[in-house]
Length: 314
Image (tube, rainbow, N blue to C red):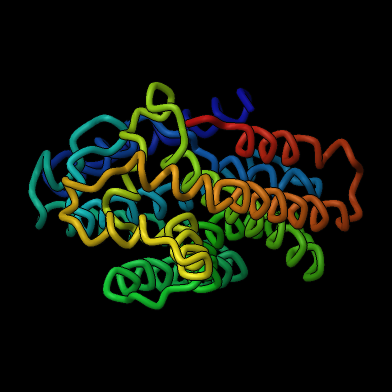
């Protein structure tokens, strides 16, 4: 992945250096300069190369996807009142909320300028970009609901997280000339990989090593955030007449006993259920990729990236 990372980082750096100076653009440059994995732009390139295209032909679209992703981060941080992003102050903390809203809006416009060069790419991007917004709205709606199921949650993370991975791959595939059937298959690979990625994220938040994740263990649990683990834990608690999770959630946030909640999840088998769900999504992704009729060596980078995401510990 080093080759792709070099291409992407170089293109991003050139874009940042070309930005006008001033209040509207400084937050864009700041956010784009923060450390990042660049998974989505890499998927644009990999989707293109899978079908015989060249990385150099999709760098603008890869950049456009990354700009859109950072637009969502800028606005999500406002909605979450998050003080830090990748260990640095969030844009609204470093500047102010109004600046972050406006700069985020302008970042979205910049993304569309790059994605609108081809009608087919613009259609793919617009469809999935709107779905990301739908997913964010569902996530906010869930905060006010007590009847969220694991099916509801899976659909929310599909929209909020997974569809942008599918979009990245579909955009690269479209530019390389992939047919409709293969576009659907590579999109399915992206969605199932994205679902596995988010479920892994939930698992790491709860059970990951704080020294590796850099986050307080069980932060989502303490906050009562409706993740797969908490939703399924509450479902199994009701079925098994156990009250630990309900008792802890009834307390003020800063008084919740997270180790007790984690122990309950372990004893209810939620940890293992989450691992099984991750493996199931990973298998579906592999099956979708396997169905694409291109030389196997072209699939190797996608399989390697998928394996890397599944094996991560932070």
